[in-house]
Length: 122
Image (tube, rainbow, N blue to C red; front, top):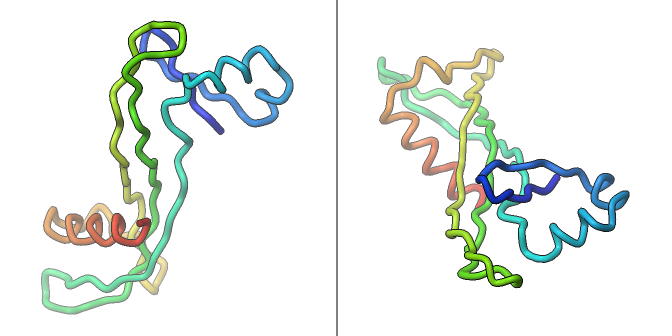
């Protein structure tokens, strides 16, 4: 999927099939109005220390949106848009028993896993 930004700031989603079926739409998107690509999923293994001191193995999963460079001006002379940095969102932290403990983790634990996620994806 690709996202194209309208002038009112709303993002529209187009699949590759839709772009292939509509040369006009494809040409608009190709002219630099793509502002970011769709999310990519990620997962990695890690360990985490629980509040009681135990260290357990977990499988971390989530979504990553790569950043996009801004454009000062569009080809038609309209003002461009600002750069967007990458975003990472963890949505699950699964134990070996298949239990999602994401909501039970504190801010410190999530910060560690978020840092590991950014390192994992690049």
